Image 1 (spheres, one colour):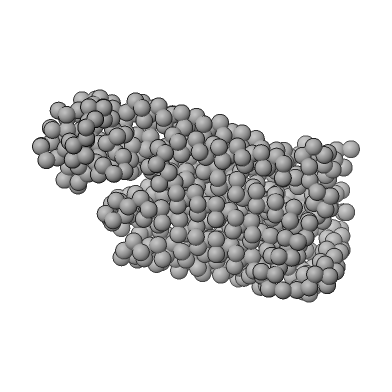
Image 2 (cartoon, helix red, strand yellow):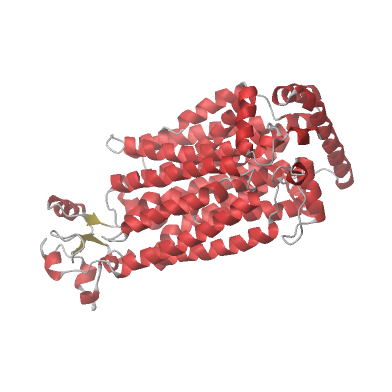
Amino acid sequence: MVEGAAVSTAKKTEFTECWRTAWKTPYIMRLALSAGIGGLLFGYDTGVISGALLYIREDFKAVDKNTFLQETIVSMAVAGAIVGAAVGGWINDKYGRKVSIMVADFLFFVGAIIMSLAPAPWMIIFGRVFVGLGVGMASMTAPLYISEASPHRIRGALVSTNGLLITGGQFLSYLINLAFTHVNGTWRWMLGVAGIPALVQFFLMLSLPESPRWLYRNGKEDEARSIMEKIYPADEVEGEMQTLKTSLEQERAMESSMGKGNVFQKVKQAWGNDVVRRGLYAGVTVQVAQQFVGINTVMYYSPTIIQFAGFASNKTALALSLITSGLNAIGSLISMGFVDRQGRRRLMLLSMIGIITCLLTLSAVFYRASVTSPHISNFESAHFGGNSTCPSYVHAPDASSWRCMTCLQKDTGCAYCSNGANKYGAGACLAATDALKGACRAENRIWYTKGCPSTTGILAVLFLGLYIIAYSPGMGTVPWIVNSEIYPSKYRGIGGGIAAVANWTSNLIVSETFLSLTEALGSAGTFLLFAGFSFIGLVAIFFLVPETKGLQFEEVEKLLQKGYSPFRKQHSEGDDNSK
């Protein structure tokens, strides 16, 4: 292939090559960034609900008292995303990548408006479903569009821009959350602002072309060539067109032998194809592993987790969450620089090792915070009046052994007011009412409902940051890159859709159960559980996921035809270039 000769020396990163190519051909970057706004929407929604939830709880007492309702508000967007990803795969194949992105924008905009005007929690949930439908479609369409509109030598770096915009959206959401903390209608503004980038992308996509691969497959060869001429140097266009022609002939031969059908028949056909099935083993594995490391517990509930660590103030929790979100964005930049030098597989394996280490440490930190939380003092509890002490504490047979964490357990209906002289000293276990919260704060004490004063709280924030640093460059962006390049062209939409559904289903399970798990197992037990899931993911990636670095789509197909084994030497384009 002509492409092989155009690759720079083995030591040069694709990131450098990407910016050099984008400088010469800005049209490529325009395509990538415009489509990548879908990633920005994805990231914004992930981050914004974590801060908005703090204020939704304050406005709606039913939400504050009901863990399941909080989880549902968060996870209904994920439920919508599962449907959006499934339908998006079909729309991608039937109507094209461009149409799919524009439909996603419309759904996201409608959802943002519904949420911002919601008079009750059920309306927020309804709006979250609309947003989820849009996010699900965008999550698998944006990287697919970028991948198919990119020269293969810089494909990984350009698809990583989608990952960068996801983390950039998360960072932006925390900034906006902080900006609206003292504005009337706090959470309404936080959720409503999301409609703006959706509107911007919709109009940008009107001026952009369809994916050249999709056009060629659907008989629009002249349009495909016209776009290829804008993407590739003149001496490479003919070679790329010939590659597309060869792929299309192979797909048509496969179709004639297998027949055509609806989306369910196509899924069945895909699973019956050895190449596609092996691609799905890898693609679904990395998407499920991405979620079961617990990342979206951190992104959806980051301020709440920081409150678990002992930082009671909403504003403080949001500010510290901004640090973790910023580290996520930095990690995406690192990924852009290394994904095509170190390879997809190696980055994911290293990322998983770092994640497991951080989760085990977080488990130890939260366990230490739990067993050393301040004792409950009868004197401090009675300080606010006889009827102010929490009834569960008053009638407990083992009240003398109660600590702050005991006071805050699910069924007590209590809150903790810190010691007036030393916040780490024995404090008061009080009924969780607004009047007592005001009385506690009036004496310059701290009111706790989610976590307790802890000298190890800062360690929890530190290792949350390290967890993000370990996650973002590898498991944060690479699974989407793998899924954009591991399926044959005919099955790329349906394969990406299946993997995205697996991702969102896993996301739903994790986000819908996190708060319940922390109540049942404690924060320490929950992070330990995620460490166990992460170890299983590490083993699965080692055995099932091949390296696709520097390979053209057709070379990936040949690799999967042979079947993958981690103990068999894998030939790649990089091998040729290093000779």
